[in-house]
Structures are given as C-alpha cells and as structure tokens.
Length: 177
Image 1 (cartoon, rainbow, N blue to C red):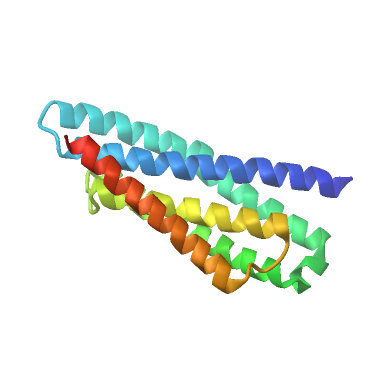
Image 2 (image 1 turned 135 degrees about the vertical axis):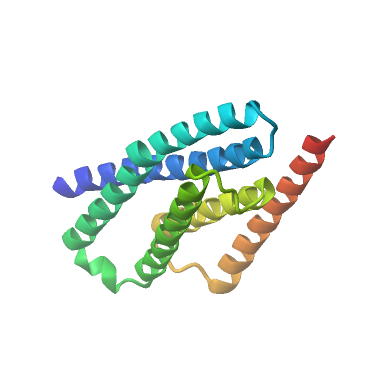
C-alpha cells in the first residue's frame, strides 16, 4: 500500500514540477519582452515579472523538483527490479535531461532577475518546447513500459518537434501583424 501512496504523490509532484517549468518559461518570455519596452513600462513590468518568477520558482518549481526526485528515488528503492528493465534506463535518461533543463531555466531566471535578457522571446518559446518533448517521452515510456523503438520513437519526437516549431513560426507571424 505504501507503494501506491508514493506513486500517487510522485505523479502529483511531477505535474506541479512541469506546471512550474511551463509557466516559468512563459514568464521569461514576458520578462524579455518587457525589457524591450520603454520607460516606465519597462521597470513596472520587469519588477512585477521578476517578483512573479521568484515566487513561482522558489515556492512551486524547485520544491516540486526536489520532492519528485525524492519520491522517484523512493519508488526505485521499493521496486529495485525496475532498474533491470531497459525502459527504465531510457526514462531515467530523460529525467536527467529534465534536471539539466531545470538547471538551464535556473540560469535564465538568475539573469532575468538582474535585468539581463540573453535570449530572444522566440528563442525562449522554442526552449519552452523542450520540456514538452521530455514530458511526451517520459509518459509514453512509463505507460507502455517498453523502450520505444528508436527508429519510431526518434521519428515521432522529431515530427512532434517540427510541428511545434511550425506552430511557433505561425504564431510569431500572426503576432507581428
């Protein structure tokens, strides 16, 4: 029964972690665009977005990430046979990528807190989709419990990424009109 509670809590914190990651990058986009505005809009918007980002990052996103990793580790300890299954190795690879993505978000967060925008809003929109790709890969791996055929899986992820990039380009075109 403890396993089911761990699993339920793990899923809840995975969801809150992803929610935080998706929203923080949206705030990065808005913050970057605010830094391009003239005064007083620049300062007013930038200060507000910095505050919103700080609260989201340290109250929701970081705690969710840490709790997710702790609960995921606890699940692996309770079910060590999973570590013998190839799908779990692939899934854990994506988890490492997600942690690296999270750390990349932290670097962008720190820069924007100082009023430094090193990336354009379009670059950040593309960056935002990395978490989406990781989410798709992890969900399919954990639900199907098979290593996705690398040919089909890779083609599927690349196709999905292309669709996302086209959608971003179309959105940018409509937004600029």
